[in-house]
Image: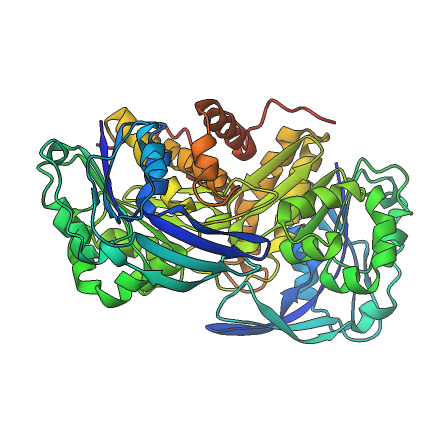
Length: 307
Length: 307
């Protein structure tokens, strides 16, 4: 039931209209693993530099995240610097330094090559394919991508899509990849490009899940305050994949419940900077918000009776 | 169980990027009544000019909509001309002519003064108050408003709010009225201004329903094509109020199911220009999409089982 996630582990500098943080632990694989570990064992495959702090290695290890595949190379760790607008749906990348990630060609360990659940986080389609080809017979392969790869490595990405069970994209990426402005058309068009399931993440507007025979729509968990949206999509994917891996098979019902747990984890991560909210979270927190979410969206609400 | 709706009845000219319509039947009371009539008897209170076509009067009457309160005055009928952007969440008002509506002071008929369910559609808070004061002991009073009244007749509106059971606003109006950018804070702040329930309509992103003890979030029904968003909010309110009136009392469960029926009706109205989709709709259509919506949003999905 173990999940392999390949992605970035880095240091983020984040600016918002109401504060910020410098060189805080980030990267898609970090957020993913810290969410997935609530549901299933998870192994990080990635690279860090010589400046990666031992305390951050411990942070993963103490939470039963397997870091044997986290290589350390000479040079600085991957860094990203982003700035959010007042409307937190919009952000600018101030700077991006691949550093040790630039030459990284991940090689899985022998036991990792027998993994059933693979998440290819937002890295180049070429690297995603390179990792996928090392896995003998995965049960569920999911991947994320971004506008940069859709625009600049489109052919590699298109070749990868039929090998995926699940693709996660945001609304802008869904439009770019499909050429359709309408999101329902976009989601259905991407299904035809290969994946069995397409998850369109719409930030504060929730998620649309497309599969051959069904469509699932969920709102986001409404929050009074969003501190830092960074990592919400990766934490969403981590909880979603973790839930699937825990069950060991895929049904529409399991996918849907996975989306709800993903929504719950995404809603937690934005409440603090970096991975701070995820590292302090308990299973009870997760279950409490899951129940609150079910109540929030239950149109046959029976618990509250007023007047 | 009859509902009184007071609002505009007019002729709309609508331009979209993909077509348009000239002098088509519109107005908040028209959309509201044509949706509400599926659930409950409904009476329109409003005014039309001498150019109002008999076929449109028949269109209401043939659908059991009570038009005794629809006054006819010398002069042209209310007219609105709007233009939608490619992003249909954005529209410009090209022109607005109040015409016979300018001097309208609605007077309810004796039997209408005993009504239990009142919907004050998007007209001035002064007129809304004038109508409300004629109703002896309403069970449920709901109202809509818009940015113009929030900016220019704020005091009248603020005085009306404590007399409302339900207020419907869109996200921009919720922010303007409350002074809060975050929608959860905005909804809760408006609750403190008087209404027991606040419905924030977010167009293609669904609805948030705030009440003292609970929050309900629903996505919109995902559509492959939107022809004309005009009237979606009014049709939403019509189905919502109609459902409440049919039940004759208010519980959280009834409010929530009402929101779902409102969402269903809002999703139908945008599929064609003007009221065209509403007038051809059958009860079976409504129930079919209601069931589809429940399935679409059911996180414990059990009907579809795929591997």
